[in-house]
Image (tube, rainbow, N blue to C red):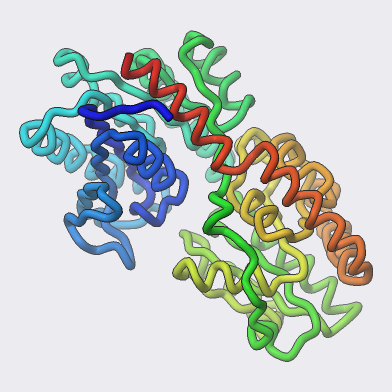
Length: 395
């Protein structure tokens, strides 16, 4: 394992609190384990309200975030407020003990503005691209226009400022090269693989099924592009054929209240539990109890090119998956998933019911996904890539 003793790495993440953001937390712990001092700047959110704390040796600085944005101008306001606090906290940390790297996790693609003055002091800038913001804008608002062009420009400026970058998959690497102009030799693909020491099967909690024989699990963000309305339509079709199925929906987001009402309006609220954001144990309980896990992501460019953490977590829990047929979703899950025709809610429902009727198939798919994860995609493999990448950054 490389040793980064004497090096200080500052990680900045705007859209989620740490350690709730599991990818960022895994990266921070891996770098700390390799000898680096690690500080993190992130927002304060529900369950993570302390302005400063040290967890597992990692210093976490949290700043206020006045709202969870919904519209384009709401996002811009949120980002500008976050940018102010990121700048202020970065200088405060630097004057306490100078750091050698700023590791910026998007969204948004504005953190390069924080890094620019530090680059003059010899600090390296690493851009860790978690989301394709231009594609995310189209997925949320179904248009391009001047705001889209502005996001493309921010992304390009971020790559031009970065000394190195991290992509979560090969599709993101291609974007970094073609749209960002990044040198391929300065890009590492570090996938968001779960830590199988933590995300592992637990004894099921049968009471979560609410007296039903089967439970369908969903874990993830609940936003415009996640397709929870499509999942509810599939649930309605399942209801027409059988009454032995319950749905457990875990996650928060701007559309949570909307999808709750959507389910209630279709008289399905008695077969669907919306848990919101939950702690780690409840997350594992829901996944362990689920017979089938689903990913109803709408087929947008953003979803087609992105690796979804929930798919990896389903595989770690040996669960068969039903999802729409998207490029990176198929690459991740391979034989662990059935792939419905895009936005065909009846086909999605049929594939769920097919798995419920064939327990041997569920077991086979779950074992296939787990083997693929353990052998190639888990965090145990990905952190070695991160170590070698940082050897070059800190050389």
